Length: 254
Image (cartoon, rainbow, N blue to C red):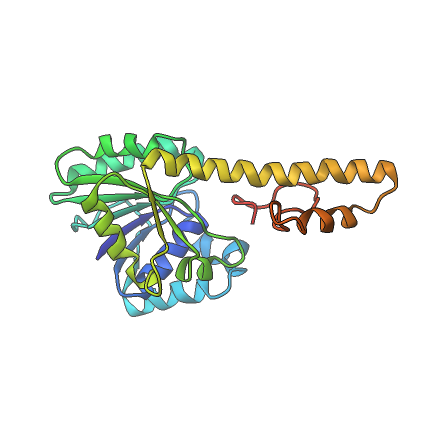
């Protein structure tokens, strides 16, 4: 399929690498704040196993092309418009969608892979206009430090979609990464967007709570590691994200 990806986030880079790797025709438009030359030397991209190599491989093979100028300047029709913007680029995303929709003649599915407020996917769809134009919310589940693996071997895809045809197109885009068993979890768009925010909130709550317990343990002369092990052994709680620390790390606490 013909896919145009916008953004300079880890989610955008990973999608560009993975989707071109399986044969889709991908055009990646990094955000003006960080074009490709800057991305190539970015520490976060170089630290990701396999990711930079896959991007360079796609560029060499021609399944991935880069656009560092005007978005959609080629005038070529696309099937999928994939947005992976940071939260502060929300208004810019809306303007971009409207501009691309004007130039697009045929049907179009917008994949909102950004962490925007609840209801933003519906708002973006309104900016698309016309029949055959639909927007879905694909929740960003990328884990920093294992982005390639988490995209190509996902535990699940969380898709907010209210249109059967749009679901079919997204399934086709991700078919190579959803083959052994169906890991697509479907729900309404607003529910998917809220699930993302609720997940972030839960992770933040666990980390904050353990920091409070660590402070109390220090006051009482208790080694908090014993407490953590005891809590984690309870199947209702588990060990994940139960470590005290100096703060939250990364956009997804990964």
